Length: 150
Image (cartoon, rainbow, N blue to C red; front, top):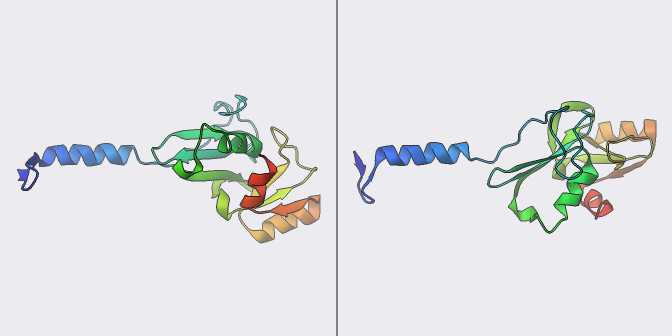
C-alpha cells in the first residue's frame, strides 16, 4: 500500500515515525556513583543535588550541582532556546526532577553542595520556606538563580 499523494510506501512512513519517536527529547535518570558532571567531570555523588539539561534534539547533559549546570547554561556552547528541559533535583525528594522555571530555591551557607553553589531546589513554596526558617538563607526564583551564577 502506498500513500496516495507522495507515492511513499506505508512501511517507510511507519519506520520514520518509530525512528522520530525514539529521538524524542526526554529526561534521563541521574546515575549517582557513575555519571560524570558535564562541567566539572566529577562523579555525581549527593542525591539531594543534581541537574539536567535536555536539548530539543534529545541530547542530555548531567550536572552534580546547580553552579555547574548554570556555567554550561550561560556558555557560548549552548543556546537556552534549544532546550526542551531544564531540570533540577528536588532536595527533599531526591528521586524527582523539577522544572527549574517552576521551582523554589534556597541559597544558604548552611548547605554543603558538591560544587559549593549552596543552593537547594524545592517543589513548593512551603517546603522552601520551612527549610529557610530552619537553615537560614534567601529564597530565590529561577531568574534570580540564573543571575547568581553568571
